Length: 318
Image (cartoon, rainbow, N blue to C red; front, side, top):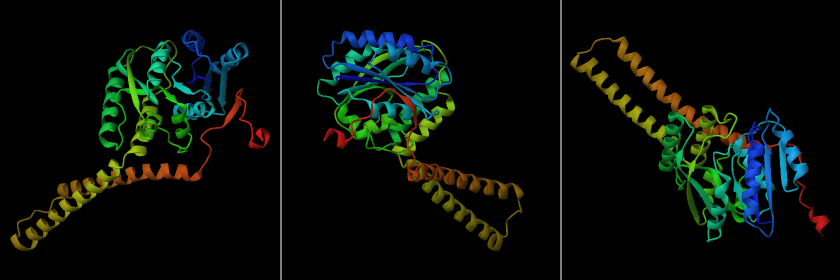
């Protein structure tokens, strides 16, 4: 199979039909001799998204779907789609149509110029608030500064990757997924295609500020030790300042005898030290929580229903 298109779905009943029509028109226009497939991953939608996917699958055998037992998150949904993808090249695209399917032929053509990854870089982001654009811009640049790998700025998960990259991603079982960071960590030759992001076609976004913050924490803790270093350096700095203050206090008390008992300075010192300690403990706790999640080795997702046939067992193929 030449191409697989992975589409995570969460309450996208308003966009599924239009997305399918645009995807089909684009991919059929590419005249792929080996064929293609669309893999929709229903991530615990509460609307009629799953019913629409079943209807599409009954009409088009190239439509595959996976239905999760509950909402596991966008990155896990993308991972499940990649696990089931059979194409030599795999496109990841969201269902809200902010990322245009019409860009797929250009991504596909670029991939075959000797690259393993071609990501779509946003020139502009229409239909998003200034606060969201500002926080996204700051996050991408902060992540680029503190991580030890080069993660492209102003990019999401909209990209095309080769089966070689998909195979490498399947070897990364960590629970807190940050796929664009994992793809950058894998390496290989990568290129970009710029585009202008449009507004949502319909429905409401499922990516709240809370989920965006969670994704940001996953990206930072998965690919950077800088927060731990900051906590350590802050601890040494505060300890040094506290030691100097202690020396000055002893000098004022026993040598110069020039001191005033003060409640304000005492409380400020206590609150400052306590705040730094809580921040350090919180940072360490974030890393420990992620280690604990991976140690438990629970499955990344549970599939309630699918029309994707399981791969043949070694005994059957023998």
